Length: 246
Image: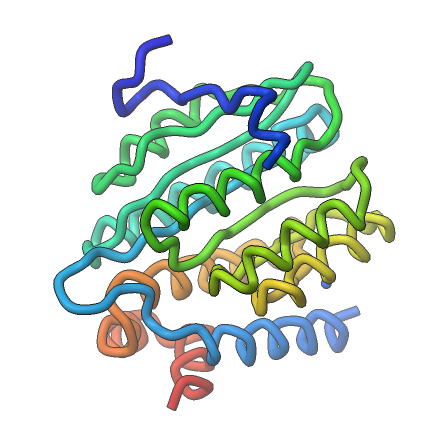
């Protein structure tokens, strides 16, 4: 398989060794409080790195277009601020898990995702967490964003991997579609163990999620100064985030 920027790299099987309006508001506040503790992922002249992971199994088909639009918006924010390398990883089908190269132009990743279709299969979150661990062992990963709706793996196994990421200082920000209680339990634990954050979303909260994703990406790329610039331009939830960082 070609390894140019537009073609994902397969994550082989060997890699296995490797949250009503009041409730939504509380989850958003919890998310913002968590982001407050996330320092800028870069230091000196080095660039920040953000790993963006997605479940592309068939259960996500009804909201896939929404998710792609949110991702594209986040990537545009990253492109505008610069200073952040992004890698995309997704899983679907029968054991298929693929990752792009780290790229400086997130537009390439948006193009890649526009060609991905959902396929039936089980979740492969283990591979995502293991991949994130291996990547940060090579070069620091500032944060992982994961979007999914279910979990069909051993929660203790995933928790162990999440704990390892926590030790390495890699927070995982988990966004859940739907109301699967089993997935919520696992996602909250992954977020807790990595000192990340958990938040549930649906089509009704898409705008809010878009702002949060963009704010996390901008902060990971340029720190508080970059977030202040975005706040002056956009306000809204980015202003709430900035207030939490002061």
